[in-house]
Image 1 (tube, rainbow, N blue to C red):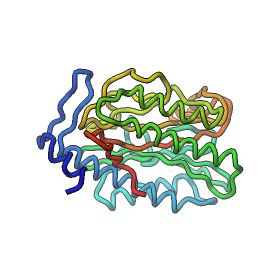
Image 2: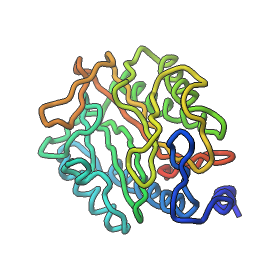
Image 3: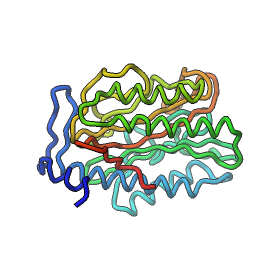
Image 4: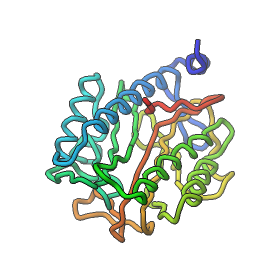
Length: 272
């Protein structure tokens, strides 16, 4: 019996989450089982998308692949219809930070593409994002992408029972700052997740240690650093969804859904 199985067996087998004193839900083992399924499917489909993306295809074609792959695995696209969002996949190109709407835009060689995806299994959510470079890239862009990925895992290392949300935020900020002079997006942050896509608490990508809610086993959060090559200011396009960098610089975005345990966290959306 592995550590993940032991942890799940130690929790309440009921169907209803408990709620901590700070409003954060503590999931039952049944709920976490479903979240692990939803996370696995989300990660698998993102891998398919990463391997499919190429210059010449449209962002709508990527969206169609995402929906087909999610449904073929028995899950439901989490974003489609969420607050009116029209697609299964958020596709954010170059200066677009998050919430890019899939459509007729043709992907070009040299583009930097953020892919943000969610899946639902029996009412429980998985949520994850990756950034993919298409074709040849300069060293600075590759460094920025690697910084985003490293910042995510620096945050995940702080997901321990007894730590605070601020410990995650501070680790992300420190990792980014030591790697370069990037803009850390502040208006959009990570979040709790479970029976709703966005739950308490907020998980900022900056801030001091030893602040915010204390992490307890059975909590689930999505950590998602977003960093810009230029400044940290953002604006929303006229479609009321797509968030872009105010200075037009390239942005990158990475995200995983993580379950807090007594020991090492479970990264539900990590498949490789």
